[in-house]
Amino acid sequence: MEKILVGLKRVVDYNIRVRVNSDGSGVETAGVKMSINPFDEIALEEALRIKERGDANEVIVISIGSSDCQQQLRTGLAMGADRAILVTTDEDTDSLTRARALLEIVNNESPGLVILGKQAIDDDNNQTGQMLAALWDRPQATSASTIELSGDTARVIREVDVGLETIEVDLPAVLTVDLRLNEPRYVKLPDIMKAKKKQLDEIALGDLGITAAPEIKAVLFEPPAEREKGVIVDDVHGLVTALNEKGLL
Amino acid sequence: MSKILIIADHDGVALNGATAKAVACAASIDGAQIDIAVFAESAAGIAAEAAALDSVTRVISVENVANKNLIAAVLAPQVVAISDGYSHVFGLSSTFGKDLMPRVAALLGVNQISDVMTVESPYVFKRPIYAGNAVLTVEAPTDQTVIATVRTASYRAVGSSNSAPIEVIDVAADLPSHTRFVELQAGSSDRPDLQSASNVVSGGRALASTENFDLIYALADKLGAAVGATRAAVDAGYIANEFQIGQTGKIIAPDLYIAIGISGAIQHLTGIKDAGTIVAINKDEEAPIFEVADIGLVGDLFSIVPELTDALG
Image (cartoon, rainbow over all chains, first blue to last red; front, side):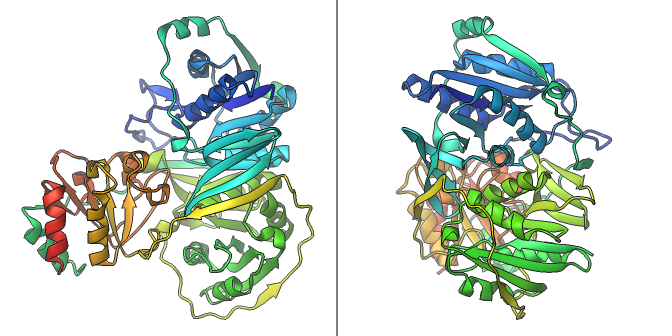
């Protein structure tokens, strides 16, 4: 295939313990490390491997958000993507808006595959890939743990509740990836330098004919309910006694 | 009045018991009329189970050979075709619901609310974000169909003493052939199902090998418990993916959860925070699992777990 499109979402780094801000309007992001959504990194790694096997010619990374997303796109370029597209907006975007924006880019670029993370670790929504596939009227294979291409089809093993499901989809298609698909490569310093020269195009969300305006309103962010502090027992006897007292044995 | 359609989750033969938890969520909306749709090749048995669930008004059975393997791209246009007149369409936060519902939402041109944990009003819901580090209250517009998945661990299943009418209908929709089922490798186990079990015994990276997981199985069998695992244990190949608990695995709410050799990464804790009692066995007394454990035992799992298994007679 000619092109693979990979979505990279800028999210709070997965090692950060996120805290709700004092007025409940969001979570603290000031001074917090931001990274590529880990699932999206796996998506990019897979696209790069497909290209390195000779099954694709170009890997394009795309992000939607403020100009800060350039950082994550540059990291994607340093990993090996050929060029980047940033759809700029300073507004919060919901999954449907993102899917609509991706569809516009898909219509411009005609990729053989769109590979996305199965979910973003900030909103944990797990929606955008399925929505893009629906709007594009193309197949989806979500939560992929193995992807094999042959001609105009992809055979995908999906991680599902009862085990592993294999499906076959005609290309072009949208794939969303799970954790065990691959282990993303580390970026090397020379690649970071090279990435600075790679093409990064910006287009405003509004210029794609899309308004952000989330339809589902975020009313209040709250910290989760805390569990009460428990007891430490000394040995197995103490554990069995404590379980018996709770009527659990 | 809210008119809610729930898309049944099933394996082609039996209803997924968690569907009864999605009904409980729907029933927490005052005065809701609740219908369940069963899409299957052969739906009668599943529909009968759905019709028995309390609070259900009606079961809609859509039989089609194309519905044999629950392909999202095949089902979504059918769900859209029958969604007219419903104020809400709910799925489960199962891998099936997660695959299907956003596709339905996009076809309807609306957003989706994932993982509903509390209903505040017919259009206001709470859901976890950031691996459960925050709870977000969202408000959906009242002039659109609410598409949502239900975080079933937040609900207790409704009872099964109902006998709602079952309507068998044909759905006219163009179904794609671009997505084809090949095979399903389902783990076979005599142990209870992880998502519905009252007791769960779970192992982490510290188990260090597939063989050592036998310690987990032995204790689980003594307790009649299901077995679970952390991402680290699954990544290391000690146990299959369907046993993973956490942000990207299964979210569970057993009465008793025994975490063995599990440090307690936030991504894991989000999958167990609704458990009734959490027991942690870990050699590192600083492990974060002890911050959420009701009962903690610091020590070497390789001596403690066999001793505990024996002690349970």
